[in-house]
Every structure is written in C-alpha cells, then in structure tokens.
Length: 211
Ligand SMILES: [Zn+2]
Image (cartoon, rainbow, N blue to C red; front, top):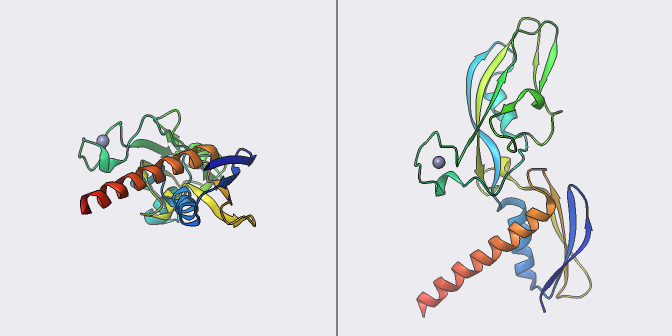
C-alpha cells in the first residue's frame, strides 16, 4: 500500500519516506514541492521616492526575492480571482510599504521596515537587508505581493531544496524538502500531494475523453 512516513521534521526541513510510490510520481511530487505550490512574493513595486544610490529596479528586485509568509486559506491566485483587476483586491493581493524618512546616519533598511497591511503575509525574517541609506537619503514605496508559482518565476519557489534519494528498494524513495519559510515543510508536502492528485485527476479526465 502507498504511504508516506515522516522520518525527520524541523521548522524549515522535512524528510519523508514515500512507500510504494512509482519513481515518476515521486519525481513529480518533488518538482511540485519546489515550484508548484502557490506562495506570496512581491511582484509589483510603486516607488514614491528614492534618493538612495540603488536604482528603482534594483529595489524592486531585492523586494521580489524576500520570502513571504503565506496564508493558504484566505487568498487565491490572481488568475483565479473574479476581481479581474490588474491591481488586485483583498482576496488576491497584499500591500506592503516602506517609508524610511530621511536617514540621520548611514543605515540599512531591512525587511523589518517593510510593513504589511496583513497580519500573516509579511517577510519570513526581519533581518533581510534591502537598501543602504546615507545621511539625508530616503525611500518611500508601496509593494504588492501576490500568490504565484515557481514555474512562472523563481521568486515564487516554495522550497529551497527538494531532492529525492534512493533507498535500495525501488518502490520506496526519500524526499527531502527545505522550505523558504513561506510555508511550513509539512504544508509543502501536504500541498504537493494534493496538487499531484488534482493533476492526475485532470489527466484521467482527459484520457477518458479520448475514450
Ligand atoms: Zn482579486
């Protein structure tokens, strides 16, 4: 019988044994866990003021690469949202802001100053450096985070590590997942299994129409 056994689990990492799972399914699950589960990332930045030496696009790129804690229950992917709005609505995007004020001394703006309108969807850490400001320089911006998948852009990867190792038994495989922090490693594996089941279901329906 097919089963999944947790061998090791910590805050950022999980190791599971997939028993009686064909290699191609185990591999599909590995890929889905890496790039197939929707997580939040900043994908739109409106710069209101920037007198730092870093160009606007440089700031937008740094913001995009900050892993964001993801709430899977209250939000949906923009492509599935019926607001059909480019800006998005409260179900498909979260707004964050930086308003540094003028720096007195040279200092680094970190993710701690990236304040979110949402209690859950925010940077996974407060310590990620974003911009260096010299005295008198300031940065003010609005950033929009949306759900997306790593298959579209690496900023939406749900895991930093997703590897499959052999066990000696050809029907059993060990899957190791390390999370970006957006989701717990357990949520990634559960989400991956659900997504794989959904895809196989769609596949079965397509096959049946070929009848
Ligand atoms: Zn929407």
